[in-house]
Length: 160
Image (tube, rainbow, N blue to C red; front, side, top):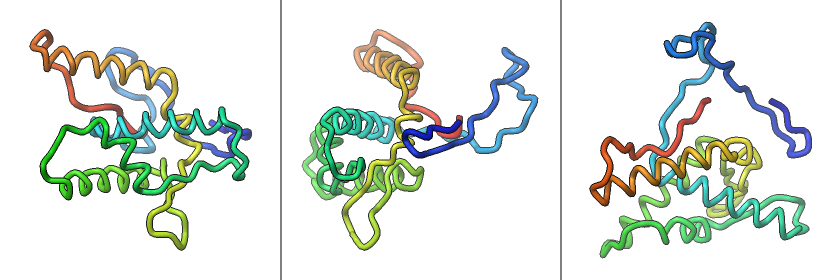
């Protein structure tokens, strides 16, 4: 897949030829890994922030740059209240590091706490991904309310 306008390309696995059986005719190039709920949530929030940035028409060479504190504040609102602020910050930093490892954030060279939100996030967090995430949130909410069964706490998978 090539997106010349955004300046990125990526490989996407071909759909399974067997359909229901789950076996694939061609081996996977990249292993699929389930993302944690909080990492999935962070990606959704970063995607929303990128859309707002694009809509504002900001003139800083088309790159959305966020500090670690700004990124942490996006996620902090959705974390449960805790008396241990250090533990919460450590968890948020771990989610940010994982987003860097996966290539959705890039730490700016020569800085300790500035991150560029990579445009490839737009391809990963698309309308279908958001719909799947919303469905999982609904199942999770139902599970918490005691109405559903079998809801997973996983947000998405990488490597699709």
